[in-house]
Picture (cartoon, rainbow over the protein chains, first blue to last red):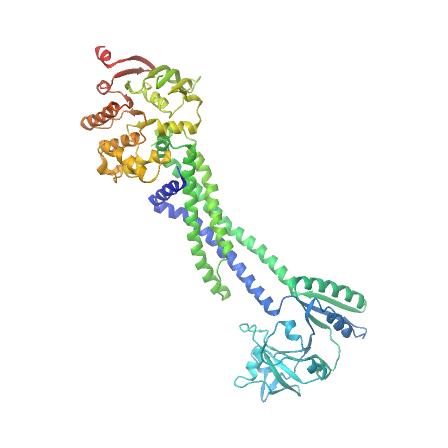
Amino acid sequence: MNLRQSFKMALKSIWGKKARSVLTMLGIIIGVAAVVIMVSIVQGSNKQMQEYYESMGTNKIEVYAYQWNGKDVSDELYDYCLGLSDLVMGVTPQGYYWAQNGIKYGTTTTNNMEYGSPQVYLGSDQYAVCNNFTLEKGRDISYLDVQNYNQVIVLGARVAEYLFPYRDPIGETVNIDGHKFEVIGVYAAKDPDSAWSMDNMAVVPYSLNRLLNKSVTFDSFIVKAVSKEATTKAITMLDSFLSALIDSNNGYYSVYSQNEWMESDQSYTDMLSLVVGGIAGISLLVGGIGIMNIMLVTVTERTREIGIRMAIGASRASIILQFLIEAAVICAVGGILGLAVSVLGTLVAGKLIMDMVLTPGVGMTIGAVGFSVVLGIVFGLYPAIKASSMQPVEALRAD
Amino acid sequence: MKLIELKDVYKIYNEGMENEVRALDGVSLSIDRGEFVAVVGASGSGKSTLMNILGCLDIPTYGEYYLDGEDVSELSNRELAKIRNKDVGFVFQGYNLITELKAIENVELPLIYQGISGSKRYDMAMEALERVAMGDRADHRPAEMSGGQQQRVAIARAIATKAPIIMADEPTGALDSRTGAHVLEILHGLHEEGTTIILITHDSKIASTAERIVKISDGKIIMDCPREEASAL
């Protein structure tokens, strides 16, 4: 007997008992749907997190160093960072200025913005590269702006939108606590949907630290490495450089990158997927036991049929095959239906929980259906063997 | 060489215990190719057990069974299944059709297990159905047919593989005398074409249509002779 025939027979017998088959499948449908939806949600939220990190920029190293005995290490550190040239795409000091009166244009002040006034950063011409900003219009801060203490400013999208809703900001002058800055550029929005947007910012040349903060010291630098490997290497080098530079009795330093956070987030998510998937998997297991139960009932019910089949020449192998295929087909159909349910469920859950279009991953999809087929075979095996091990004459005697 | 040869065969249930049952108690029997043998006996005499062993549905507790010269007790499950499929066709008292399948599908079943597929299988099954005049009922399910019709389908199933031996266990037991006679007629027709027929029955009238009558009682053969001699007794 060939496989095609066995499949036909299995389908016929499943179709012959529709209500029972559907109820049996229900266990698998619910199990598969539970696993796929749960894992999709976890993975979806992880994806959202990863996207957030991506927009902040990957391979970004934040370096912090401070000496409280008055010794200024910022120049040495900056030079060292710039000296990592093969490993890095950009280096910038990261300074802040707290604008008491916000950024003002005419009578409009950013202090009235709904989610607070923007952060004003002090950065180099490589600020945008380091922080993953791209220019929407105008020009970026240049090396000469830094050298010449030019009072220029590049606005983040949210700020530009707030101060200049109807006009081109380029060439306009804004006022920060009495200092005039010419708007030379606007960054493209990269985080338009969140309230505490990364676009709620502005950058001025870091040399203006002297003007705004009355200081020439920078504690904090951002190094953008060229790759993941370069990030690791640069971190190691910076660590050893700073451990030599900073006297730990009189200072403090730290070097870290988002990559580490991303990785730990990722491994956390992987673990969460496993746990959540495992819990949902229990329902799949229960579904599998349901299959075994119903197949056992079927074997008992069909003992006579098995006897007849044996009497007219069915071998043990073909009886086993018939019952196995039947269980596997029930599971496969259940798995596919469960998948349909879970695609729907994932879309709905994604919309409700995370407000995003969420679909189950391809690997998981194939895995879930494959797993349910394996489940069918595993749980169908015992009933199938039981069916085939009867003596034909005994099986024929059953009613 | 004899087609069927049983040598001192026993079938014992619960051997050595108080409720020991000797369904077959030292049976020796040989049947030639092309014979029409009736095995008669009261219920419980062991005649069905005899048929089950002859048809490889059951295995003897002791004794030797040669089918076409081959020692059946040496065969594996798989080889026994093959014998049931190719060499023996069964006709049971209760028809034993699979109720979910149409007449034609029931008849095709042994051919499926033989690995014959497609139109060849359909043709062979159809030929068998027509042989028992059930060609026009091919698409009916067992529940849609009378007992006699079901038994004819069962015979069609038994002959579909062109098995050289037909074993019929009370084939007319559930039928009225007229349809029963028709079924017997079909069996005789098959016999005339050369098929070996072994007919199990408790009804001596039906047995008397066979060439040779074997009478069994308490698991032992108590008479084995041609019809003419039997009727003289």
